[in-house]
Image (tube, rainbow, N blue to C red; front, side, top):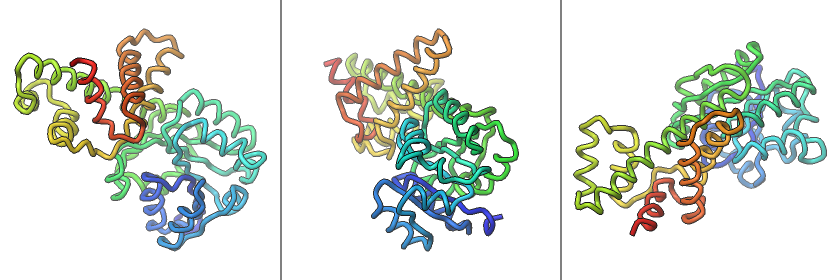
Length: 298
C-alpha cells in the first residue's frame, strides 16, 4: 500500500513537520508544500522526499493530500481559490483530501460539497495529543467522512501518524468532536483556575489545593498536568498555544449557536478565552490564561 499511494502534505509547522516525518518513515512517496518554501525544502532534504514549489506541482504528485493548516478558511483558500483555482483544480478525479487542521465543522461540510462537485473526496481527521504525540506517531485522530472506501484508503496514512483512530460519523463530525473535546478541556482548566484564584484570595495555598483536588473528586487532566506541572511551577510551557485553544473553544461555542443549542457555559468559556487571548496574545502557552484571570481579580 505504501509503495502505491502517493501522499502530498500541506503545512510543515510545529505539528505538521513531525506528522509528515512519520508519513515518510512509513514508506509513502511523499511530497510536501508550505507557504514557507524554505521550510518545505529543509524538510525534504532531511527526510528524503520531494518539496513542491506550487500547488500545481503538489497536485500532480499526490493521490491523497493531507492538510495541517491554522484555520478552516485557510484550508478552503488553498483548496479552491489560491493560485487561480486552488489545489482542487490540479488534483485528479478520485483524489482524497484529508483535513487534519482544527477547522469549523459547518465550513468543512460546505468544502466537502464543493470538492465533491469536482470529483474529490474530503475527509476531516483532526488530532489530539500535541507535539510530543505527533513526534512519536501516537496522536488520537477523529475521522469524519461520508465515503467509506476513501476512508479505508486513507487509513494506512493516518495510522502512520496516529496511535488510535476514532470514527465519528459523517463529514464535519471529526472537526466537531475536536472542538468539543478542547472545549471540555478548556472548561476544566477555567474551573480549576477560578478555584485556585478564589482559594488563594481566601487564604488557601494553591499547591495544597491542587494536591487535595488530585486526591478528590475534582481531579482531572488539567489539575494533574497543566496546573500542577506548568502553572504552579511558573513554567507555562505545555506546548499548546493560547491562540489555538481560544480558536477551538470558539468553534465549539459557535457550533452550539449555529444549531440552536442552549449551551450557555460554552459561550461563557468561549468569551473568557477570547478575553485572555486579547490580553496575553496568541503565541503564549494556553496556561497563561490564568494570569489574565488573576489580574482582573486583584
